[in-house]
Amino acid sequence: MTAGGNPFPSTEMVQRRTGIAVRARLSANENEFGPPPEAVAAIVAAAGEANRYPDCDHHDLRAALAALHGVPAECLLVAAGIDGLLSAVHRTLLGPGRTLVTVAGTYPTMAYFAAAGGTTVRAVPYAGHRADPAALLAAAGTADVLYLVEPDNPTGTDLGREEVLRLADRLPGRTVLVVDGAYAEYQSERRRLRTADLRGRRVLWLRTFSKAYGLAGMRIGYAVGSPDLLAGLERGSEHYAAGRLASVAALAAVRAQARLAEVLRATAAGRERLRAELAGIGLAVLPGETNFVAVRCPGGATQAERLRAALAEQGVLVRRPDAPGVDDLLRITVGPPAQVDLVLALLAGELAGSGRS
Ligand SMILES: Cc1ncc(COP(=O)(O)O)c(C=O)c1O
Image (cartoon, rainbow, N blue to C red; front, side, top):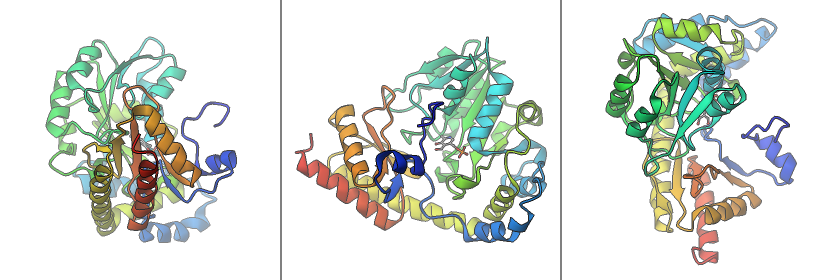
């Protein structure tokens, strides 16, 4: 943990703190299938230009994304990952005297910036490990931003396109709906928001290259929204935060759609196997289409923490969210078969050894 209280220690920080070598980091929902080879080649090819600042307009990447999503390039803003975009949302739409509505226990970075910046935060509990649209709407009042993670992290559950749009259409006029789509690629097309849905709505859809595209270390993502919402966001953005190598890597990844499809197939296969086998050893598996599986431990937060710690001692990191309402969950990133085997064997061993308590 850094002096500033970063809630997400890196693998290196964990190893330095515990002295235990990490065998598998299944606690950060990185892409365990690796970066696209096409992106690696693009990084190598561009490395000799590392002395140059990036094209801060990310013209080529935005053109490729515009073609992929069927939107004009003016509807896209590239930044240093979703976290970078959340920071810009905070700088431009929140702050003292402004209000954020979020789900209590969801991905915490938006609320983390809001707390540091003097924003009023209204955190609405999940209803059965799923965001509660009626309660969010009731809390929205005069809120400036409603932040929704869809599909959600850490639960993996989603509302689905129709419910998200119903929510968007009932929000008060001044409220911007910020949809964090970090896991959108994993969601089935039927349930996923569409870029056409954003037209005429006060919705920002945040996307990343960190998950399905396998480029978390590059720090690059983008926002999709109306040009006027994006112009506001850009005023609070750090223009050169997404670097030159990140930009070329992301462009190569967008062009390598066959690789993305392969990762999505392998992830879904691993997820369904993990889900079936975790249920078989007595854990209550939550539904979801992401690159992780969330399970409820029948013994509650105490058991979840015991299991997390036992695996960590053996060099396998899984996440136990510590917010009330989700602290009985273990969240496990889906990787290739050998990693699934490893985490299943360790969990089965722990549960058998403790009589499932
Ligand atoms: C819901 C959610 N949003 C954002 C992020 C961070 O995304 P990025 O790497 O693009 O900053 C994560 C990473 O775990 C996430 O789970």
